[in-house]
Length: 589
Image (cartoon, rainbow, N blue to C red; front, side, top):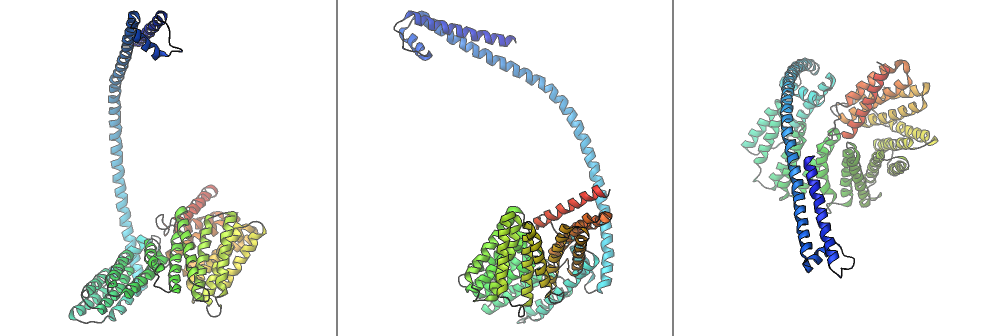
């Protein structure tokens, strides 16, 4: 306060001296400037050199300097006092903080020790469980593969699909046996033209007998090395080896290495035979496309990259380019369905444009089968794209999808191509089912009944023998419509329809193989969980039992769905599981 008063005193002195100087100047000299401001008065004083005014002006400057200096001194002292006071408080705080940190580190060390102990115990339990399951599977499959291979296969499958049961593990072992036999048959077809090749072929046979697929892939690589400096015919053989080397890597579930092998082989042979290089890339694109259908993820993205060049190759016939555009649209559609929000819309939007570009290249009369396939693919993509829209906009997209399917049916003969016809009818049902969800009033029931009729028409053709995948897909769609119709009706009729849908889902799970079609299997588990939840809402006495089974089915689907490769399905199934668990907590606790 004392320093503040000193500063204020100097400030008043400055104002007093400046005012006196100005008044002296005004009273001494004439004429005065018209409407003068402060600076004009100062220049006026200097110009006439009045001693009194100059002295007063000098005193004003001195008092201004002393005022500023006093203020700076005051601030400096206050800041110093704060720093001195703060150092003591900081020291005490540091002591308390160090003590708290020591306690926290001790607790963290104990928790790490306990976690390590639990992890070791859990790992030992898992190994015992794996050993027991291996013994059971070996007994059920009859030792069709070596014991070490059986163990590696079981461990790989359990890591990829933790919820797999013994039947699924046994199926995986049988599938590996079939893949190995296929590789062995193709190896027998290789022509031996020198001793080195004969030796490598013998090594590959021994490696296949031991199921050492990576070793087989390495041997194929050595076979290719023998052909690097040969003629064009040998380069074609090299391309053949590359095909089989890539297929062996696919059997080992290493799609990325397979794609690299195929691309490298295509680049090497391209300088000798462009057609052969194009054929190799075409085969690689098809292999990765089908692998991506089953497993999704990066293999589908790689297939898209391989397919794109064929879509812009002007050397190809228009109908062939249209076929490649259709494959690209299908791949983009599948990739988009695994994404969320903006990424999903981007993939599906590009797929729609791709299908439309294909339809500009081919006419109905040029190749009715390819034209109908592209129309059906466009309808599928439009149906998927409608999920991100609402009301009028969704109905408009779905009507376009219905139109595309109806166009495809016009050139598809039920008698000549019954399976193709059934597939289009099934997809048409999906579009009409979506229209029922986006409609109002009586249109809801009308469109849903129309969808059910389309599904039943498809199931008049599909059987478990002629097309197990189409049969399962049509049943899944029929079950979904029955579930939604049952929920809308309620009462005894509604429960009956929902129960019928549950029976269908359970039948499908007996047919669908989680190892072969993991995404389809997971989607069926998710749909089963939703149907059981709907039945629980209509069955108060059995609510808790139905909800418990629903929780198990939804949890099983999340064993396949993951946030990275299938974020859309993962998010949807997670949301449904959370809702069911909340109901259990509220109603069954």
